[in-house]
Amino acid sequence: MPSSPQQPGGRRKSVPLVQSVDRAITVLEILAKKGVAGVTEIALELGVHKSTASRLVAVLEGRGLVEQLTDRGKYRLGFGIVRLAGALTVQRDLAHESRKACEALAADVGETVNVAILDGNRVINVNEVRGPAAIAMHNWVGQSTPTHATSSGKVLLAFAGPTDLRALLGEPLQRYTDSTVVDLGTLERELDVVRSQGWAATVEEYEVGLNALAAPVRNHEDAVVAAVSVSGPSYRLTVELLPQVAERVVSAARDLSRRLGHLD
Picture 1 (cartoon, helix red, strand yellow):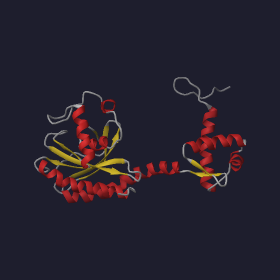
Picture 2 (picture 1 turned 120 degrees about the vertical axis):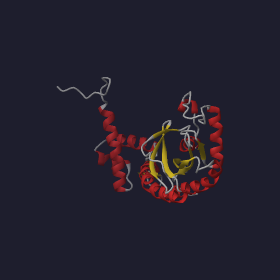
Picture 3 (picture 1 turned 90 degrees about the vertical axis):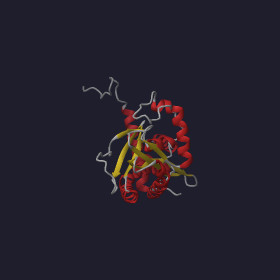
């Protein structure tokens, strides 16, 4: 007799659990097809006892994936489905819509524009457009950069919600230049400023001779899902110019946010 499939470490898979997952997904498909359905109807579709269907529906309801129509005793898909679908939509829309925003901003400021997302304690650049004045040859798309030493990273840290920086970043923080902030207390105070003014800047903190600034991109739930940044040589993107350029970056980030469904 063939043995039951095993998980890594020698543990046998729970066939009943897998079956329950399959049935729960089928319940969602039934409600997607029918619009509304009662427990009895769902049980018939599944070919299970009514009590089994009731338990499945109760779990899905607890997760917000289905909701009950109290006046009719039937169920329909809940807003939890919208939340899950919205996350996928934002990821797809970010890749598409950010290209337009990057091109417009790069043409406006003349420098390199990037869109980045948070990946654990690192930043991943997902889009890049070089402006007419940009001379850098390095392509940052797909590259991982540190959060504490980049403008995008500081924006994403600042708006990530309650965050234990020590647990997330660890200590000691890596120094890349003489200007890199490596003290967590100083970094926390900088993040307070970022939240207050709505943008972050770095002055030769990741690379000598490179300055950058970034602003947050929000989705339809008002959550910050990305950062738009402008970077350029310090002799051109000077410290004195940063506030002026920041206005354009913030405006571009708001435009991209609106494209993702955010309402100001």
